Image (tube, rainbow, N blue to C red; front, side):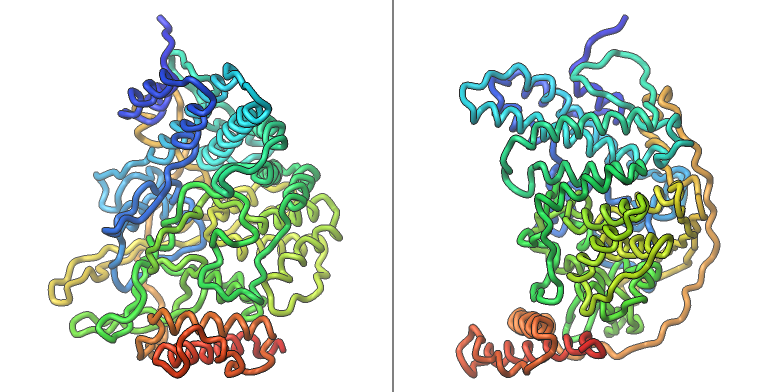
Length: 606
């Protein structure tokens, strides 16, 4: 006999057991006004805030796998240290594209596969309930009417966003040949029947995403922003819709919604005049929406600085050769090689432990070793830069190349020291846009999904082979550290079926009627890392001094804004510290060093 179950039971069916059902049922029973639904939306519809505790523990990190499956990060092999989330072990199955992503390297043990899936459906179910209950609320004023409309619009937006994320992890990329292939279970109401569930097709899931975005657009076009940028508004709807339509290869409409986004906010951060430390800040003019918090940078590079007056920098992951090569065309002319990624000295030579100092590229959009709270997201951050790129790609593939060049040139004008005219056409233009997307959106959570959709793009498809490694470490009591024992390499081939994840093991164990897509078994081979030249490490603790750093950023920013004209000494009178004090001297030295460092980037372009 079929029975009606509270909406959150669906999370149990799809994600395994949860203690959340009882608490949520009590919340539903207490609903007395639209304000109660708004609280549920904020508390359960939006993702929990990811954070780093005072003990260095990472909490509420979701959808991190997309960063490790793509071609953006490589494991730093010489030592296994500063891995607060246990990422290498947890991410083995994702990072090396295994058939069963939860299986550890040694076999026999599993990590949780359904964590992201379960959270997504919990949030979807909260949105389902709100969308059902919101129509029952009575407004006593025009303001309350608009509040009800806003809650409805935000809920529809979030449901679309979660289904879009899920179908691009567990369904095949959208194209004519894949429309009837299985996507993910589609649930839209606050009640479920006690039955075996099946996956909706890719086409059905995308159709629902568009319906939800249409509703979100109708609602949020009437309302004002609330708690920007942590609640969705009309600009977020426009940008997500442009992305969805881009994935669907609907070039004309993707361009139209990218332009709608830019009509609301077309601002860009100009790196030529940027003097801050991190580009991903709430004050950035290009932020549109953010959800979930930021832990990625800390996860991959927890410590960088002086340890007992010795330089120590042993990141968990460094920037991959694939991503570094994407910047080859412009080199130092591209300021993203200073503010998004940068060449750094890695290694450590202590009394016991000795790791040769070498050069590697590390992540700089957010500084992982600075553990102060970051409110912006490492996965669900919407920026105007994406709208320029969505629009440029859609325009180029729709045959509107003049518009494509204009959009791309505007972005590059804010990223390059010297932005040349864009003359490319046809495939050369599309390839340039693809490279710009790789550079600009690096480690923002886009690259894995872009690589998937490029394989099925009807015009100018693109695919590549990616290599990742896994290193087995052993603890060496002589040096008090985990040192490499052996390293294995794994390859994701061109057009590999592993671009689509199998449904989580916990979900299939509980609901085998969902079926599963086929993901091939992937074997590794023994790998020897190429030798890299040793370099001289930093030999002072100046870089870690906050006053020196303050001056360094100030001097570099002034040099860029003046295109290298003038001298750093001209700005010493702007020092915020008492003249000729120790802090004054530190600040001024930072200004001079920052100016000279910026000159290296400007060299050849002045």
